[in-house]
Length: 556
Image 1 (cartoon, rainbow, N blue to C red):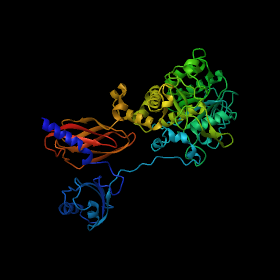
Image 2: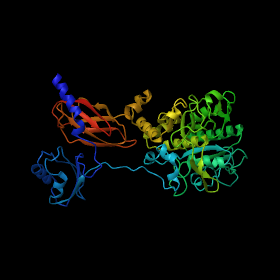
Image 3: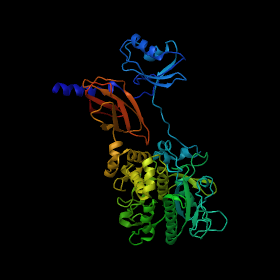
Image 4: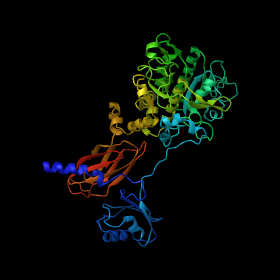
């Protein structure tokens, strides 16, 4: 028994040398998949047979797949490295061979916008938006819903060159006909409504223009700045009093409820609203004001996002409206800086403030097609999170899209959950916010990917992130015992490629290791053909970027 345990231990210990990471170096021989191109008429099977005879070292070269017979591409695999010669060099010298190279995993480049001020927007890189942009840059859900974010402020330059492309247009209203075409009580509400003046025309104000730029400036339009969601649409609502905020929130609620009730034929698919304003040193129970609308909005599928005061104080002790208001559908955001510190103006509260987001030295839009180069304040931290919500709704997950349809409230809570469970922990916010960290959008995407990968019972248990995206592991093997195909569901610690191998109890690889690549919102499952194996006990091992895992299975 001891001898067998020692054998298995040595086998596991030797895995890192038995087969390594997929190579990115063209000449790295750790990748045992060869992309071969031959001339028309070349007998590939004969070439393989001759190579196995001629190359010393029992290389075990075999045809894995015909990639393109028309163009002469074949995928070969081999088990063991040659003793003397390079397998690539040998193949390249054979008659009929045009080229031979290792079949390498692609290096997916993060997407970045071409806006000329983007290199100065440290905040977008800090919260790891580029990897998410390689998956989606916003605009619509997988269901085809046009994603809308609402902003409440005193005024805006809605025709700023970086804001106008993302103006929400009410599809059921005819501009300029002086008729309430959609029967919502507002005449010509083309882009929202200015509740300050009771009109569809907005005053031009600095603050609202700053906030709008952070939240939803057009991305990749070859000018100015970018934002989390390049093509999200923005509904503008002018407010200056508590009463006007209540009116604005009811307008948003009515438009989202209309959308839900008509399957998108009316209203707007509003998913978040930002209001960068409030009352200092007042608790919510003293001035509940508009907070009563947070829950109805959330139940319709709309999250509210708000910042605390621009002061160095604890809002849990001194009060803040709306930050101290309690609603599952409210996200409260204070500021972080370039060094992940807490600026002196960033109010805090370990109970009432959820997380931090960049809010100091921010590049954003300024009235008159200009740009503010060094603006700061919590007013810019919360709209960044509102913009992220819009981006997350665009991620390509079928189950997430179905949840948006079936249960808008649950979809909104899942988005909040993804944001709050995906922060970078920071010492500056330890004991200062609920999450003690700063938003990380890439991690939020990983959270939603894990949700989409998980089974219903795993989602209900809330264990899906730990189960599918914490470390390299094998979640389940089935059927086990197996007869023909063995299905492998696995967890990962990063998106990308890994190797799988089947070995016996002596650590001997029984077939060429198989590569599998996991990209965002793709299944974490693969299948291995075990039909050729004699009945008995075997081990399957996966090796990823930083970890490996081994599980036993039985072959009938």
